[in-house]
Length: 412
Image (cartoon, rainbow, N blue to C red):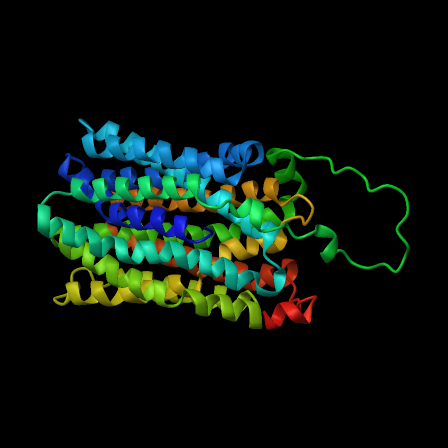
């Protein structure tokens, strides 16, 4: 009940994501505008975080996921039946808002219920559940394209996954009731003084107040995290567009993206092990450097004779880099969130990281329109290397290496 709904949602989303720019082009968009339409997904996630945080606080994780699933079904129907490019783009945006609600609900649940000793592994499993769907989805799309010859078949598959997810969450056991929350006092520093008197009531801070109160960590470590989100988002847009610019067909593009997702998925648990045992920096730095070098190197291969071969190779390199970063944004957000009231901070954290993801396709679209797609890939490589420098500077300051409080947790 914790991971399976995520797999179902991601499976359908993974089938649709590679085809968003392809469908946009088939409806009359040029390459630059197709990137803009694809950016609607991450822009929707950015705009959906604040209402999602309100919904989780008011109606709980379970019903937030159900409502998000139902609205996502409506968005999928809109994508399949859209009579115009504008309607298709609006449906993509609405789907992004639903994805934000789904993701925030799961993040808040894991933050309050997973002990810090194996937090990274648990959140990497959550990221791995998403990656499993992103890995399998493009292969399903390739098969559906061969079988039905229409991109809309993948959208109807997405709708089936959403319906199964809604039924599972609505009628299955509720993890919020079966898994107790971890007391924030457990992680408080012991001053040696006796506690007397009543326990003060926690004043709940809104999202914007929390942003201001936690502005130091958000504007430093948060910006580095946003750069990682930007590079991830750019990967989802650049790879399909790169295939289109090489005149590859939709099924071939879906297969290449699927292979990249397979490599990504294979490394998700290794990322959690590294973060829990050696520290967060040892997962973040290699991932950012590898993706930065991958984007920069790929930008020089577009006009080579073996351009298709280089495309497949660097899609794999970017998959390795992304896999090494599995769960890092979730884990860092949980690490630096206030122990007593993490939800409002997580809303701020996810808004900032999703902003990075939303800006990246816009950068790709703008640079592609002004110059060319290889320049856009190079720009994302530079952003990735700058993000690596940010992680090197700020992770040691804000996320000091900690050991588990309870030896039983480490054995668990």
